Amino acid sequence: MNVLTSRQNPLCAHLRKLAQRGRYRRESGEYLADGVKLWQEAARWGAPVRRLITTPELALETPPGVERTLVTPELMAYLSPMESPQGVLFTVTLPQPAPLTLTGTRYLVLDGLQDPGNVGAIWRAADALGADGLFLLNHCADPYGPKTVRATMGACFRLDCRETTLEELVPLLDRQGVPLYAAALGDRAHRVGEIPLCPAAVVVGNEGHGVSPETLAACRGTVTIPMRPRCESLNAAAAATVILWEMGKREGRGSECRA
Picture 1: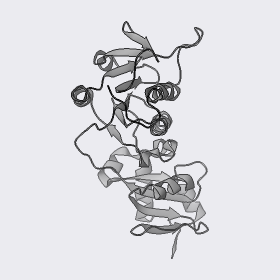
Picture 2: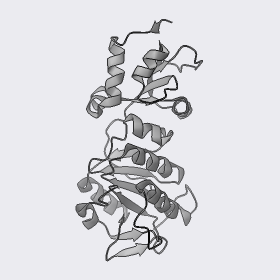
Picture 3: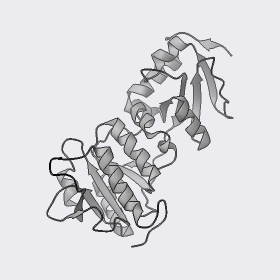
């Protein structure tokens, strides 16, 4: 197999655009992932990988139907969105848009989170702690940008994540009997642990501004995490993890619960 060396190759332009442009990812129908760990997770969970790009010294098995390309270490450094490339890039088919449905009882909703590391870390926690799905409202960081995908540590291949709108999500939750709460202060606030959060969907808001007013108005109430008075708030990913733990605690991790 020939080793690709030139930045002028059309494949290089394609990979760079996948790394940098959300619109191009949607138009192309695929996204870019990097690193040995993510590759192992993609292979383990049967992710729809299209192309594998590696440096020649890495001996990785190429699954049937996946196109393999070898590149020099220098070109890998140019193509990879990582500061320290691990010698592995691959492209994955984007999930196809489908009608929004609910089949579970525990959901997390992110409202305007801008940090891709936070979105990815929360996605990872949601998968680990038994959430049935993750919804993104109000222009969160692209769930399939390289930084988000990397932060999921493979959860992106296992747990459904959907970008949606409040107008679409709220009626669906209502029909399924899943109450919507916000992680925020308010007149209807309950401490985490005071009310059952299963079934429930809980909103975690923007890193700086919290839950948006329109989302807050659509919620049945709010939940708060008890903290020392000298502490104002938690990082969004930390807060989400506490809430996810509480959502799954009463019925056992990963099990179904009943209203």
